Image 1 (cartoon, helix red, strand yellow):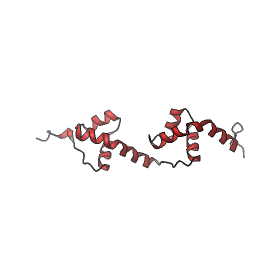
Image 2 (cartoon, helix red, strand yellow):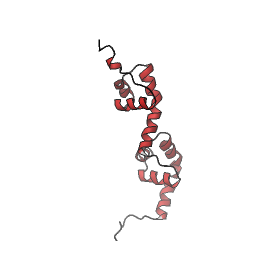
Image 3 (tube, helix red, strand yellow):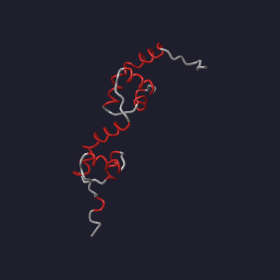
Image 4 (tube, helix red, strand yellow):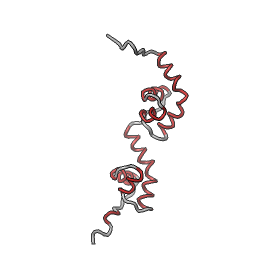
Length: 128
């Protein structure tokens, strides 16, 4: 079996990797749990390879967030803003989407999951 000669994968290598990035652990955890960023997004912001972010979080027992759970949490997080814009400010899905950078189906899903029936402001007055 031939291994890549330039790459050494050992406990010492992993320990050095952790020491290099350990000072960023709190930022990584905060961005991962609170801001719901992916490993790649965290790595880009902190200028750390994403696989080191993943290894470090795993090493310290930070529970992984599945893509489905991340999406559900994002929808819950966006509910208050979307609800206010749609019902109080009477904005259409297109207007809300432009303001927050989300699609109309996403906005509809957020409202439905929040127990609200969306209003189709675009058709009010057209059916006369």
